Image (cartoon, rainbow, N blue to C red; front, side, top):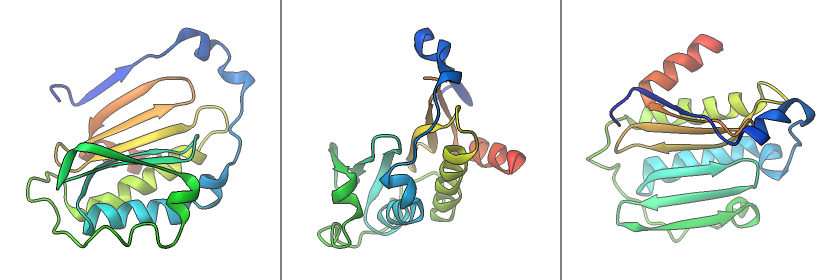
Length: 160
């Protein structure tokens, strides 16, 4: 990523009605700690180097080091099943990673904070790639942001 922070403004028609909408709690919201805990475990211990959590629609996309050309998509029922990831063997943390495994949970906690911070401007989906160190954020206003992990963590600390 050439810039430290890239902001893309989305569909103006969505932004025009932003304050006529409100976040509705869903199953992922009700199991937020479990969702982010599973994502963190998959990233630190099971070879997932990139993930995107679609909080609004209840799905998770995973990219594995051992098979980076094929991503896997899990819907909420699958992802929340307790035995869903027994088929993912333990795998060393990617040697190509530019962020530490200790940074994963603070990023995911930041996603949780942005999901709940405001009932109208809220996080719809968040992504993290430990190899390129980029965090992606998509908000209810259809705005998208991409930034380096370190920048994201600094900004989350500032708004906490």
